[in-house]
Length: 245
Image (tube, rainbow, N blue to C red; front, side, top):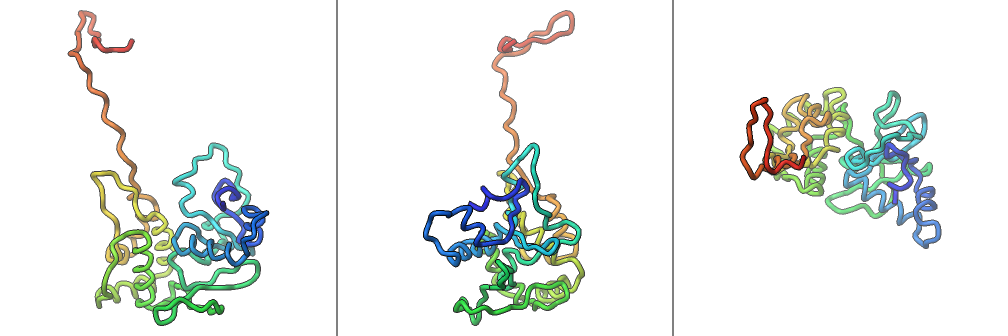
């Protein structure tokens, strides 16, 4: 239902009450139920949350892949505009997201989902506020949800590289933009999907993914073979017996 009320760029004010009135005006669903459904979309990486000009918005992360609008009408600022700030994405399960003026978050403690009490968890941060352990655990959940290869253990080499990347200014934002392209839509001859080792190997791999360098589409079908051999004429022209013309 969110898609129907977004602007032509896939953006919508982050208001659960507004969305409920738009999508379920006459139904008995509670605001809490609608909020939980939005949370599921965010956790799955299908919806992101950002702030722009003092207002919080949602955006459909895969909008451009599924919607082609010739003359789009954009009502709201974008998540990557100057002055915008990403608040929460599917990978940031522990971060908070403002909704209708109230901050709430779904966090896990000792492997169990929270009881519903509002708990502010440390967000992923390029300054290193999030440890390699937290980053790795969130990637495991993200990879499982996206049906990607799920790494089993946080090796010393992985830990070192993750910590290096987290301390690199701007890398985390590029990483978040990159994973919106996952899984890559491959054709039969290209089945590769990036894993955590490739993503943290250096500072630039996430740039390639974020810029769509690995986005693939199914190849065009080969031209239909002609059934009869060509006829060569003295004037240099060539015709085929099965030409429609």
